[in-house]
Image 1 (cartoon, helix red, strand yellow):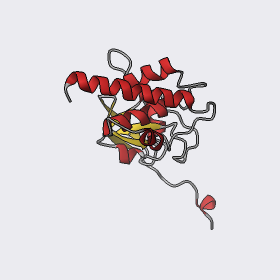
Image 2 (cartoon, rainbow, N blue to C red; image 1 turned 90 degrees about the vertical axis):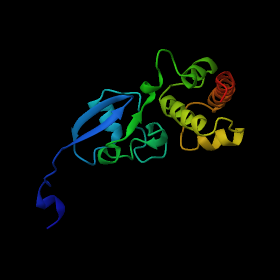
Image 3 (cartoon, rainbow, N blue to C red; image 1 turned 60 degrees about the vertical axis):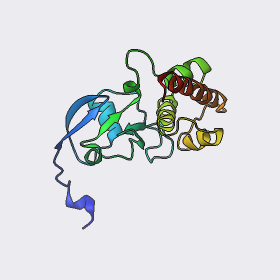
Length: 173
């Protein structure tokens, strides 16, 4: 007898708690539900996109406890108890400098990959405030854009580097 003949397997939903963009959230989900699906369907945070679904394109990039992660490869049980930041969570009273740089430097075309690119750069600059051009390229290797030649994306990253360093100098860090 193969699996199809055995009938559906009983799968129970469980309660999961996590912080999403600074808000404590609780959701009932099957443990292996993808974080990207929770964000989009349960929390209506549609900035996190799903494209490849296998962790190769970066459209689903989020920060988990400040570290870059693919939401399509992270299950509900793995996200439980952690702090998740999506593209929507970067903006406080005004746009984050990474968001502003993409707007002002034309770092997007269709915009599908943009949230993931911005999140990847946010993670990079938080980890390395003075990245070289090579560091920026390496920081974006997990993110694909199918529309542009990456010129606007790299301009945006260079703008973020300049702004980030200016902010750090102001704050004395």
